[in-house]
Length: 153
Ligand SMILES: [Zn+2]
Image (cartoon, rainbow, N blue to C red):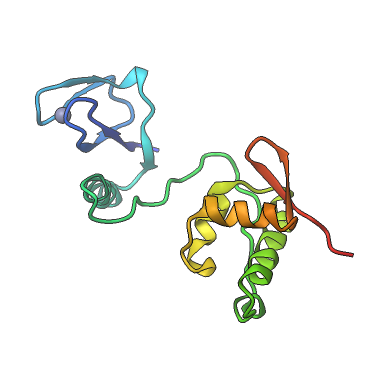
């Protein structure tokens, strides 16, 4: 990956840099040591880089979502949410079906997974959804922040 994005620790603006560079100087004048910071949103495409920098800056200003981070490790199977699940009327039952899919796909899931599912979960706060599922005994915590669905017999 030739390029990445760094957020300036002084002015908080994102900028695109070549990953081979050791340092970069922000528009605000701050010199950033790239050996001590991890670049995000790695890409090989200068065009994609420009688009990502634009999106990150918009997001930092509160004007849009962060672009999805590319995870370096091989991602497990993305849970596939079936149409039937989305048509389940009872919100709790729908949530249970979705976390069951998550558990099947990844063996356990965390709040980030719930966050990604939030559009199909009615855009509720993921922390609240997890709390409700725990309260209803539909999921359990395997290790701090990691959950599994309770298998219904
Ligand atoms: Zn700066």
